[in-house]
Image: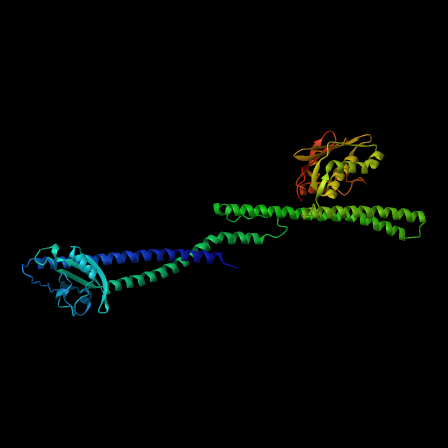
Length: 466
């Protein structure tokens, strides 16, 4: 794994190195330009001085000022040596300074340009050293030597040595700056990451069961407030999910314990002594009822678990919710008739795409609750509407849901005042129906009491691709 601190320090050092190198390159070019410009000024000044002195003579004789700058000497002053030579307009040598062991090199192009009265600059190699020279036409200062050319040159070794020393110094400073930038970047990154380390330490210290887990480190800093808020929100959701899981486990254990205890008690009672065939049949019938109850509870738990795991709807197909409502109503008319309850279905066909078995479970659960809570002689009405969404409304004429229970009706195992009734079911019907509706991209909502409970199932309409 990469270290963010090291990466930030390296990037800081890299940025400083790049900037320093860029400034160094610009500085080298600027210094070279300045040094060449200064040397050129010196050479043209010497050429003008010698040309003015030679122009004062009326004869063709020409003499140089053999001073310090035109004398080859040993030691540091040798770097200041300047050479001078007089040429004819045809490029033939006439006179050279005493520090010249041989004639200088005169470029042909310079001769032609100087004839036109132009000052010419040139850089070339002569006797193993690089020279910078100026070719100055004497016609610029007088007619006595009007067709003569004066060449003044200087070695470039001192200038190049100065540039080389400057480049070496710049590279050394660049390396020092890069190292210093890495150190500074390392310290800054460490200081910047300190809050994250403290936030991480607080998060790691939170264990399951910690009351109201939250992170408080650096929650008041603008840069980390959002991170702390997101982490605390996540911890809140995890704590809520953990509480729901614990409650679900406790409720499931309690619900399973009842039928298992009844089943075991009935079997133990039957085995205590010999029974008549009628008593054995009665015991087996009661055990069968408890097994059916266990099967229904296990099926509900499995359906709910699959829904929460995102495994529903497993299969989708074109379905007509009106047809499903008719089928569910027909299957329950016998039970409803025994209670003196009438089931009616109204509304147009409502096409949508979904899992037929799961939608049957949703409508069936709503109908079972409505029939169970309807009084004798009451009516359970199912109404469908179709448009941009498909809506199925189920209403009964029972006592309705008490205000204190309305907030929990979709909770698992919640049965309110019906908990003690034998036909109250598992308490998972509405929870499964709500989860299934959401898995289809819809919703299940409790509308209110009118006077009995009214539930509305809303699903997306149309035949969407699976």
